[in-house]
Length: 255
Image 1 (spheres, rainbow, N blue to C red):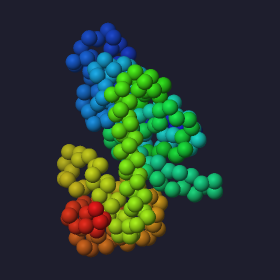
Image 2: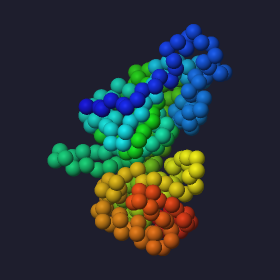
Image 3: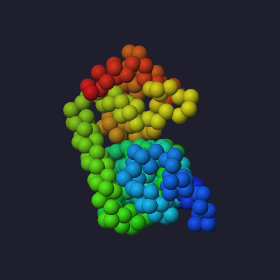
């Protein structure tokens, strides 16, 4: 069963219809500063379509470890990731688990026109999302070719990333996998105020990183230590990583 969000904030106040100043250029106020508004799927919507979707949307926050969609559950809502990281896992009948993908802002969580979810979807870190009913999304995809095309492009990008990761797991060494993982995180990391470029927080514990990389937790720790000794990265408090030499990290990752 999906666990409820910690906080829910409507993207448009209930009295918005009585407040003509709530929008600028007919774009909902909370959409104006939203990263997904431009880089995510909502970038394909015109102001009228964005307003229509915004009337059914809510902002939600989840604590790390919260289940968003259980495996085998039919999700009735889809979401844009505003901040944080989402973890997708496959489960075996005996309870074993494999982390199969990570999603970052402004990625899209959910599968329109699909049945029950075949993956467990969890908040890997504290998470903020903008959610809307799946049926509304399906209706808008049917009515808007540009919106449907944006959804298809995102699905194809995720397929490309999955193929690239299959290559990493099938052919790369342990050192290359760990370095590739850090490169992926650095490419998706948003830089909060006061944080320098190249600073990332690992969204997974060592055990989950090991699952994702097809390694043991001990091997992951050894490879991070080796990168630190080589001067490629610094590791602070086991979760915070500073990339000191991006070119060297790319070299180790064979990228």
